[in-house]
Length: 45
Image (cartoon, rainbow, N blue to C red):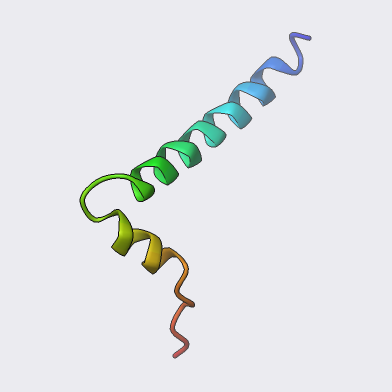
C-alpha cells in the first residue's frame, strides 16, 4: 500500500486541480462566456 501512496497522491492532486478549474469555469458572473469559449474549436493558423 505504501508504494502506491505517492502515485495516488499525485493523481488525486491533479484530479482536484481539474475539478477546481471546472467549478470555476461553470460558476460566477462570466460562467456562460467561459463555457462557450471552452466548447469553441481552436483557431487554425
